[in-house]
Image 1 (tube, rainbow, N blue to C red):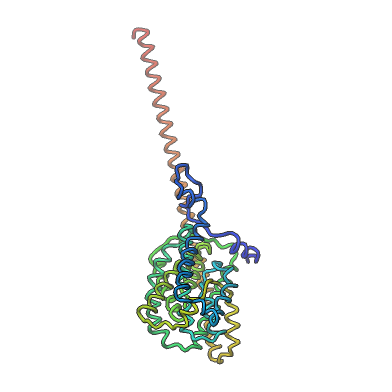
Image 2 (cartoon, rainbow, N blue to C red):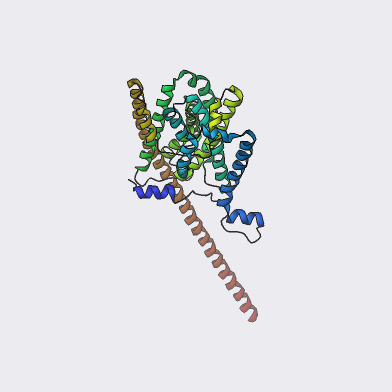
Length: 390
């Protein structure tokens, strides 16, 4: 099992992995813009989205006098301010804490909490997506494409059919159960001994694309009633099943969730047009986006004294999630063994071809040398024969 200090060092100190195509050394013929982008890429990636969002927020806040809202809507900015220091550690978005705090602590209805989660993540995750793209951080593009193809219809269908048939208590129970399941997935992920990981999905094929589409659909349905979900589902599948490194899976899920939340806000605000005013007010006073341990959500849910039926349903979901993620991890190990065999075989064949090529080149060079020597001997013979008048 991985040591705790190693996990903390990996998540907090090592940073993200950049693409292989990123230019790290400044070329001699680089102009001012390219030189600044290469040398100060990290600061530019942080400051550009930050400056744009701050400009938009302050301008709009002065225009519509949002500052008066802080007298009655101060709770969420305070909560998210203290949690923003660990933003980006995992693939969870701001909805991971907004939804449980609003529904369990502030006793706000899940519809308002869901819409608020979508609104704040459409801004926060989009900024994070800009950072990922400017920094050219390693992401799994195919997971984003196929995950989005599944998440968009999943979000729309879930919003129309699933959200209407779930009660407020069931939505709270499903939220804490799903996110507790994600905690189980992380536990399984970090308990595997010296597992081999890849920067992208190895040996990508049609069935893997179908799995990503199905995962996106399920995650989109979760997002329809909880405000987040496709990021967690995609992160769990590509790390446990396809053995993608967390350094790639985390920014991949951030980009995927950013796209999904923009679609969700567009669907709720434009097509359905019934976003509660309270969700807009909380979004107007919020300035941070955070990620927090889901154990607090589970404890908070139990403190609300749910009915025994909901507790049994949540326990059953968590148990099934543990079984499912364990099964997925086992399948992932078998898949990687087959991939490793193919990689080893291809490497051996490549080495054999190279050795055969070297041997053939050696034989050709030897034949050329022999021909050169024979031609040299013939020239010497003819020269000597000419000297003797033969």
